[in-house]
Amino acid sequence: MPLKIIALPKVKEQHLTGIFGNFEEVVNARIAELRESKLPSNQQRVKFFQYLLDLVDPTQYAAVQARFLDPDVVDKKSDMLKYLDPIVWFESKLALAVRLGLDKAGPKRILDLGTGPGHFPVVAAYFGHDVTGTDLPNRTTGVVEAGHLYGALCDVFKVSRIAHKITPTDDLKALKGPYDLVTSILTAFNVDAKKRPWTTEAWQDFFGRLRENVLAPNGSLFMSLSDNKLTPAVWARLKRNATWAVDQNKAIYFETLEPQRNPGAKPTTRARSTRRAPGEEQTEPSRAPAESGEQSR
Ligand SMILES: C[S@@+](CC[C@H](N)C(=O)[O-])C[C@H]1O[C@@H](n2cnc3c(N)ncnc32)[C@H](O)[C@@H]1O
Image (cartoon, rainbow, N blue to C red; front, side, top):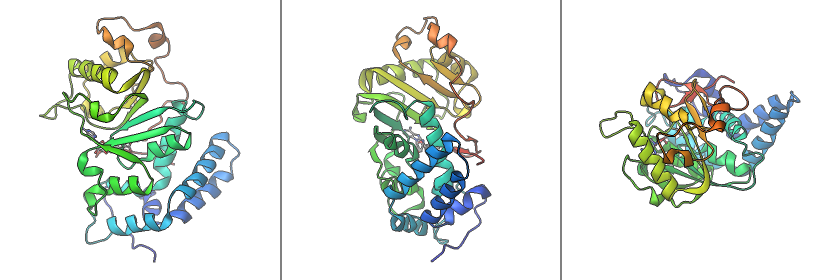
């Protein structure tokens, strides 16, 4: 039975078809649209969405929709329901995975911190990688509560997760490293107990723990950070040792964290010469006011 569309003031109208529509119909309609163009990137999207149709049980997806869009439980003040739109989020994560070279790389072990609904792990697994997500313990259970939509979607997408909260002091050993790549996409972990953005020292400390307990010796780190959880001075300092960084969406990539061992060190030649990301300017959707991003198709 088609779902009744409820007004969701915090969610952009472009997501409504994806949120309330039948999963298979929504994905097949997008495939048909993409097939009209011969652009290689669109052909890649077509193949990915075909894979997604095989991966996802549409009955299970419909059950999640029915559960979380139930007018009696729906939280109209939250923008989280936008993640039920399978098109926008998978396409943005596909673009990011390509930008990180995951479509061409050999199999990597990847950890996605704060994976939320799990779109990035699905895309990375599609490209042949072994991916684990992490999220706050109360978001990894997928229980029947509006606040746990992330867990329910990860279950539908078959994303394996570790329940874990990143704190300024945790040793990160529970994350079961080593990983070749760690990603963190709009995961606002970098605040202290009073919700103040981490200092440079807190970041150096975090990088040290990542190096020691999470990353493989040549492991890489990609982060897309939230503007309001970052001071200009800290961003400038982070960029100094980055392989590339994009100011606009605070995306930053470290091919290795090794140079961070010496905080006073000058940036490497590579960091200076490739400060800008390869490919397009922006991979992630531009920010929505609440917690993550929106993107126009
Ligand atoms: C805006 S969502 C982004 C989800 C996903 N990375 C994406 O791009 O779609 C932020 C995620 O970070 C998680 N998160 C926030 N603080 C965290 C922390 N201290 N440790 C681990 N995860 C955290 C939230 O539970 C949520 O899943």
